[in-house]
Length: 334
Image 1 (cartoon, helix red, strand yellow):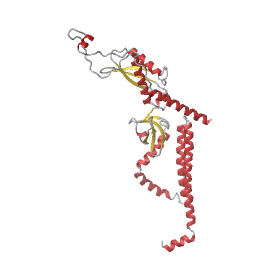
Image 2 (spheres, rainbow, N blue to C red):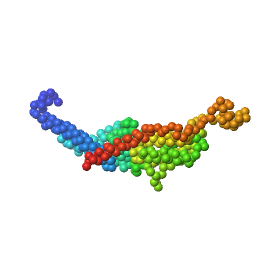
Image 3 (cartoon, rainbow, N blue to C red):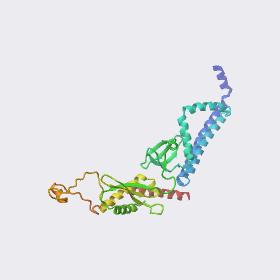
Image 4 (tube, rainbow, N blue to C red):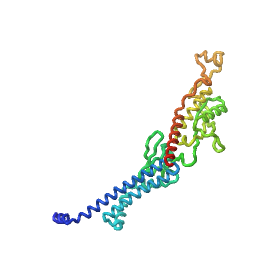
C-alpha cells in the first residue's frame, strides 16, 4: 500500500468506525475483568463467613470468575467484527500447537478444575502431602494450590500433585483423629502405675475428648528398648487440635514428662550400666562406694513442680480465637 493510499484512507474517515470498535472491545475486556474481580471478592467474603458451605461457594466463585473473563473476550472479538465461526478451524490448529508447547500449563489448569470439583478435597481442609508438608488449603489457582502451614508459611503446590500423589485429608469427615504419642520408662517400672499416670495427665490436657464406647484414650506397651519399656499414649483430641497435630503432640509429650517426673517414674536415657554383685567381699551400695561410684537414684515423687505447657496453651488460645472469629462472622450474617 502506497503512502497516497494510506493518506486517502485516513482522509476518508473510514478508520473512525474501526477505532470506535477497538475502544469498545478494550472497554468490554476491562469491564469483564473488573466484574470478575468484584464477584470473586464478594463471594470470598461470603465464603469466609460460612464454614459449612465454603467448598460450594468456592466453586461458584471460580466458575463465575472464569466465565465472566471468557464471555468478555468473546464479546470483545464480536465487537471488533471478528467472525468467530471462521476462526474455529484456525483456532483448532493454533490450539494444537499451543497445547504441545504448553502441556504443563494446560495440565495444571485442568487439574485445578478437577480439584475444585473433587468432593474429597475442599478449600479449608487440613491436608498432608507425601513429602510431609501439612497445611490448610487456602485457594486453588489456575496453576497451583496454596497451603498455609501452622507456622504461617505459604506453600505453593502444583495442582497435579493433589491428583497424582497420596494426600492425607485430616479433616475430611468426622470431628477427631487418633494421635499416637510415644514415650519410654525404665525397666522395672510398674506398668499399671505408668498407665494410670499418663492417662490422668492426658485427660487434664484441655483438648482431650472424654472416653466413649467407640473412642477410648489408652496406653499401649509397644516394645522393649535397649534400656527402656516403650509405650504409646493413644488419645483422641478435639477437632481444633487435629488441625494442629504438631502442637498437640508437643503438648501431650510435655504433660507426660511432667506427670512421670512428678510421680518419680524414671525416664531412661542411653547408658551403660555396670552392675556389681560383689567387690572385695562387699555387695550393692557398699561395693559401689568402695570403687568411688555413686548409685543412680530415681527422682523423688513431687521433686519438681509442673512446668507451663506452652504448646497446650498456644493451641487453646488459637482455637479460642478461631471460635471467636466464627461467632463474629455468624452474628454479622444475622
